[in-house]
Amino acid sequence: MRIYFLSEKLAALSVNGLFLGSVDGFERTLELDPKDGYFLECKPVGGFRPTHVRFDEDFLIDPPPQAEVYHTRGGAAVFFKDFVREDASMHVLWQENLLGVRLTLFVQGRVQLCMQSAAGFALVDLPDEFEGAKIAPAGEYFLLEGENAFCILTRTGEKVALSAGKITERGERVVAETPLPSSLGHTAVRTWERGKLVSCTLRTKQQPTEAFYGLALFESVLAGADPAPFLAEELVEKAAALKEFLGDFSAVIPCENQDEVGLVYKRHERVFDVRYFRVILSNGKIANIEEV
Image (cartoon, rainbow, N blue to C red; front, top):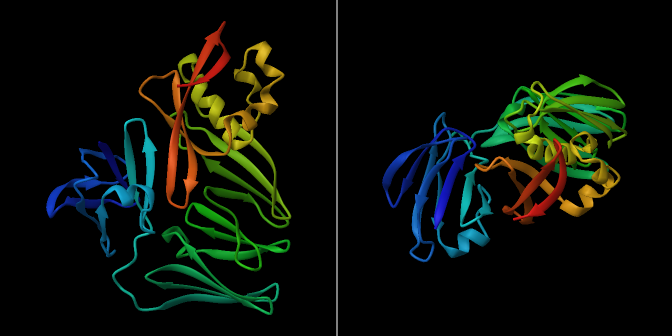
């Protein structure tokens, strides 16, 4: 079985004690039979604890909290994330009182935000980009801005939005420019009002050629932007139904075959399926979409 290994941070990958090389956003590929069972170590650089897992059939359907599994055509991708720091001591970064909530940002293994109010207590785990974060009210919500990342939180600690990106407007109306993981340099300008996403516009640094129309189309649907510019006339009237047709996917993956695109669907916690779709062009527009 072909297994692709990736890591949130640059890390050393070992299988059964044998060092196989480094991994990060670029994968390392191995042929492994999960029936055999393997001991994996992913050791990140920069003062973080290594993640140890047993790779077997159970792992593929129920990975531990610091790993995600993506089932692909003929294989699977394993993504290591949420590494814990070696220094387990507690460091308080700041405390604030806003909207009747006592807020404490601290580091203890990972970056966390403690929220205390008359409504109760919440502890919110955050990526490392939020270690130097600032917080401000956003109407009845909180806007937490980190290093090229932001989070919109309810007063009880629920994450309304968590994304890489840059905030361009603050207050009851929050506007952010967020990158999309594509080779075309797409970004999405999203607007939240009272904690609700109310609009999304897709921007691009590079206009897609016909070979990338499928990628651009699915990214438009994911971002909530209008996909009509990529559709043939007979499909334009069905543009609004595309999201229902494709289902609740969370990411778009380019494929080696440029007319194919992989869409990522959540199976359950930390386990995902990748489904593949092909677009068929007619007169420079997408005339049909089929699952392959």
